[in-house]
Image: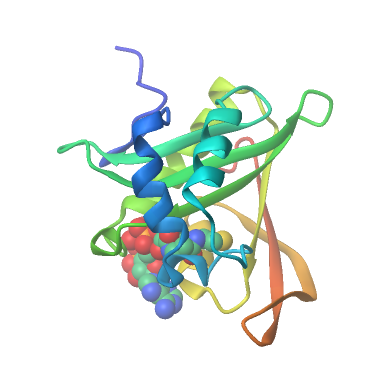
Length: 177
Ligand SMILES: CC(C)(COP(=O)(O)OP(=O)(O)OC[C@H]1O[C@@H](n2cnc3c(N)ncnc32)[C@H](O)[C@@H]1OP(=O)(O)O)[C@@H](O)C(=O)NCCC(=O)NCCS
């Protein structure tokens, strides 16, 4: 049987529904999640709703909820952004917003699924991302999946009173582990 492209071993990438706005609002205003991201300011429910409705998943902006396979519980989100047909490249962002599900293998599983979607569904050649150099858990996951470090953007993000270096990473088709 052909593999299900949006399903991993313990999680699935599914489309976002309008009813997901409540959980998004909670995650995106939770410092335990937001401290790892580029975002700085609190987000309103109105902003979240408009953003969700205005960014329906499509080739250039493929946005997903991450849900558990067994209970179909929404635990985070993942996006492949700014894909172009010429370069066949996109930028990935991921967060597990439900703290009970951190360190449970869901992020690695969803990253592998996202790369398969990038290469086998979107026909991309390259996926890149940036990550704070102190986010060792995320870097471990990205390297485990097959991403390589390309360089460091020094003092790229000023947030919560300190400068942060960003590590730039990428994976090319054929490099997924
Ligand atoms: C990054 C993230 C997606 C990873 O997903 P996850 O489900 O928590 O991670 P997994 O359980 O799949 O894997 C975690 C790995 O990191 C390792 N790890 C955990 N904490 C670590 C640390 N402080 N330093 C180094 N490695 C660490 C674990 O041992 C595991 O590796 P292993 O499988 O070889 O044992 C998730 O933690 C998350 O969303 N974090 C908050 C938001 C965020 O950082 N987003 C990314 C922004 S670029």
